[in-house]
Length: 269
Length: 212
Image (tube, rainbow over all chains, first blue to last red; front, side):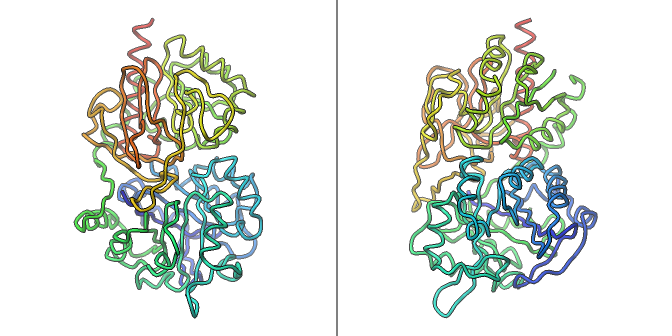
């Protein structure tokens, strides 16, 4: 079964739209919860990804509080990350409701830490963020919000992050980010071999058809979108219907179960 | 009812706590295994690596406390790594598990061309216990969220056993007397997972009543 992931970009209390990695603040937690009733919205999603995209001085506790609030609204896996630079940073996020960690820059600046994260929390907990930009031939891999080339070819970088504990690979297209022009499937086609780890593709989703196209690709396990304005309301439930109609295997859940269970044990307690 | 969630320090206990709170179950998240003596139900959650988790169990004295809880016939639910720890050993590490049930965890086999990546991280359908026991009220192949690299491929003795498939069949969930386990994360599996947790809590209450 393939996955649909909704990504929330957070910068010191404000959720962001990103276009080619340039940010635009949209609204705060109140805005988010007002426009996205997460207990309902999450029923159309396989996972949430919450990223601290703050450029410059971060506010880790404000971010952890945001993760906690979001994770508390839904019963699906939550991945959190952005700026993880120590085991304590990771532990803080896990304690605030994250199930998995998105690690990007540390694979460049501190690969030993990445291996420690995998040894401590398990490889399945570590999602490697790999930001790529189209180059004259193939793709360049960049970190630090697309500012710093890692200096090795894409295939070598994929091998590097897997050798240092990555359990999943999230490829993000800097060129397509926020454009709504569709995913860059050329990224996964450019890989010399299918990685053992699940591949998540992000960047460019503007409509259901883009998610369908991505998940029809044999190499793509999951598609993520950070498009904060195109999937308001029940849009992700519609996405799942479109996926099922296209023959993509996706999980379905009975919406009535959550409601029926509420307070079942209130009397016993 | 008093559900004790044992926090080994690497687990995501926040989401499990939220799920129990949603169900209205009185529960405590504890790091001190002495609290297990007060529990009608224990949940052993799991995110983490095998050896680190076994070390945490031994360092805290949880090994004996969990065994005593089970000897009293009280229900214990292991989730993900917590389920794996109920068994004897795992290819992931060298330390001995709790050994409450016979079995050894093996690494999942990746088959990239067949779409079987490792870790196995996705919602996947579970078969074999349609609508019964821990799966009461759920359909033929309810979907649960898995994220793991190791799995139990065989389970001896009769009892409730549900299966999932990833390159090969593996145990998705089971019940053997008071011992219950789920390789998936019920606290992360939408309303389907909440129903599974509710079934665990209900089952336990009945068994404890009988034992008393």
